[in-house]
Image 1 (cartoon, one colour):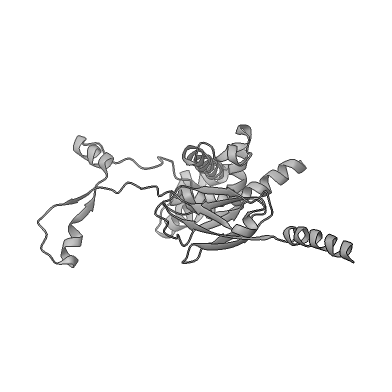
Image 2 (cartoon, one colour):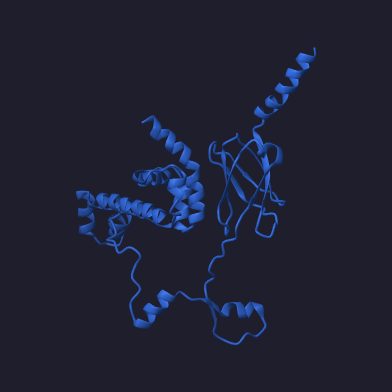
Length: 258
């Protein structure tokens, strides 16, 4: 009987530990102030959680899993789950990363009326101001020949008694279709290059993406996620990085199967 109890005492803690799949913790800033709204991502199982108003989070994780913490205007943090994490939790400190504030110019003396004075604040685009001072005309973002469109370029002019023979030729010869396909390809490549240029230099290495796979991985993410394309339009690299993190596991699994 005593021997049985002895083994039971040994086995129970081990069973208790192995059954633990939930880990909790708290996230603070440098001043030990709890941070709410921090996104917590388990890189190994792709589960996500968000800290509450007290900076507390709960997420499913096994020993050895990596947790990453992401919040706007803060440097990303990470932690590895170990046996102590289940009993003592994971306390994580995030470092504030200040962002530049665009210069504003007050052209007249303030009157004290907020409704009127707010109209006097103007954001300064230094490059645009320089071009204006030099006298350079504002160039279009993408100087492209507009592909012919059946409704706008052919049918609509006919209603007004006009015939656009060039548009008819472009549509009949397939030139308009080739132009649209080329522009889609150029836009797609522009998104890939923007992501490469703006993602952290160690992003791919940390996520086991080889240098030769970077373009393929980014293409995979762009084709799978409209949100990633929207983050490019908004030039929001933090959002783009978070979305790409969610595709790492799926991409690597597909590559291993091929």
